[in-house]
Length: 328
Ligand code: LIP
Image 1 (cartoon, rainbow, N blue to C red):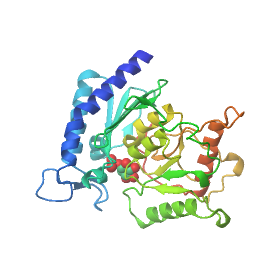
Image 2 (cartoon, rainbow, N blue to C red):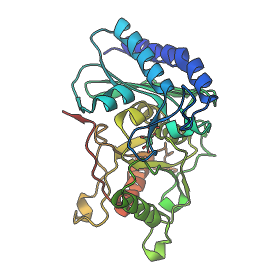
Image 3 (cartoon, helix red, strand yellow):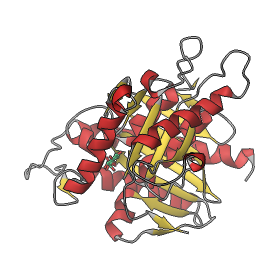
Image 4 (cartoon, rainbow, N blue to C red):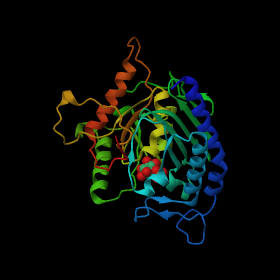
């Protein structure tokens, strides 16, 4: 895969995101709640009304997939609506694979809350290499491709730069974005809430004393905040590969780092082995850390701090069991 190929794939993803933008905006302003009288009513996916799909999700995914099939007939396609509705996980291959969430932050979409958008990622040889997130209501287009940087409406990311962008050395200097997810069993919710409580609790009581916790309602907006420099960390267990494939490219190309998000709380893994592992994007557990500038006279310290912050977080959160999105 050459730099020219990546440029072309990125241009395709941008063109597709822009093409479906008007349908997204149109749907956003219509009735989106569980009303029976609207063609745009949200349908319940999990039986608990916490996860929903609208006609707009299906329309956008179909439009994008129809175009991709015409342009790249041999490429594989993974999409929130078609893949989730077929009920089958994906067989992960080295083939170019487009990974699409037509409406990320669907709950925001149906509540007319603008942190919602279209996510188009491309993985080649199982590695995410192109990412486009378009938040049409906020008029924010995030673009990135492997080795060529990340941008917001053409401005290089991170948008916040040193000296305004400092080098946090502990969770107590960090803002975390996370989500409550749509699986609401008592077991899942209590693991999640206890993990968040530990992260927020004072250090003398065994916590991380995180400075700030935010929930925007979608993995895509969360990852764009990390790429921009407006949040230090994103951690979530349970989102799907289509929620974050594009965001992973945008974060890493902005100088950020991504890791496996399975926590170590209560595990007997010795301290010496608690090293944040590379992200497996089909496993639904992720930590992302924003770009951290090196400390004065300490080259490489920014990368070390990214690992340190991820470790500090993972030490305090539980592991969660979710069926993976794909098998290799
Ligand atoms: C959502 C993700 C979010 C997760 C939700 C859901 P959707 O995606 O953005 O991170 O917590 O459960 O998967 O359904 O709005 O596209």
